[in-house]
Image (cartoon, rainbow, N blue to C red; front, side, top):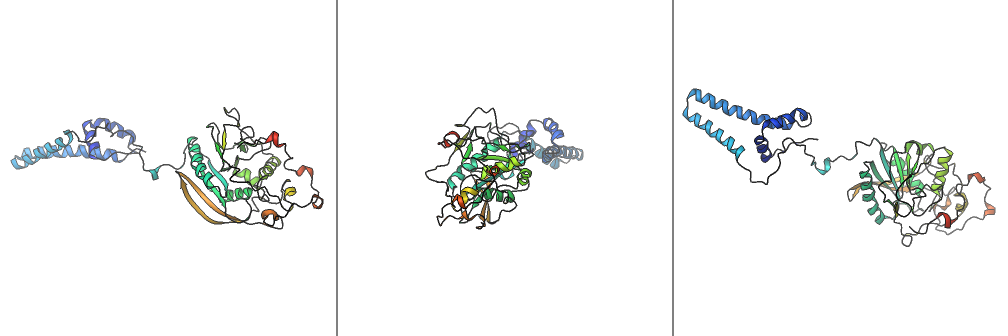
Length: 383
């Protein structure tokens, strides 16, 4: 956008430096700066009218009118010729001005034809959100990524359900966002080479096992995963059976593989496990909900073929648009619903233990979503 400064100082300088240079600029900027040529035409017209009046008065030989014309001419050239009391500036008559008011700044990056919705499952992590939102907003702006942050805040009294919150965020995010990031609030990318590009060929696992500071097993796809909207719908989102902490990402991995969607990961980075991401979760202050009750331990280790994006039940209590240190975010206060017949472990307040294995129905071994892991080999104790 080209604008012209309209203060008196700028007008004086434009006239002093000559109309020819400004006129040369007008031919190329006439479509984007319609007000600039008007100032120049006004100056030219004023000079023309004054001298026409002087010529006419000289022909009429009226001394009083001639004196008025001479006085006007003298005042006009005095206005242009006198130095300004303001500090010297370069002539701005032909330059482009880019100082737009804050509310006129572009909210998207025109070079990025895709738009990313960052879906943040959330509950009682306010301090981490205060750090995460401006950090990731600035990080993505440096990559010129169109994006918007959605914080899906679970406000009911049930156990935390990350998978269902991601399903809610997908349904409630803007339709112009053509891909999503399933993003943990406690994971911050440190290496600028970490890209949040549109996952053209298939899901893109940003926080890959060889880069994540804590989880390193081969089928891990948690932390930060980029998925196209059509792919997320194709696999019916995530299972809604995972109340409490863990395993919902492993079940989603099984869905992606079953749909024959290849998972891509970053390579050739100059950083590794210790310096690619910062994991800000404090286990001493925020203990994870790892309680297992009823038959949860057995059921959640197997593929869910009954629940997902199409079956999630919820309501939005309120929707808030806020800004944290310049980062605009949408907070969705969500109330999840639980089918206690299917998943009674959504509420373990009665401290009921796990159902004995002898009472569980036999299940197919191929439905096991993840084998039991050697924690020393696949898990780090830091982070």
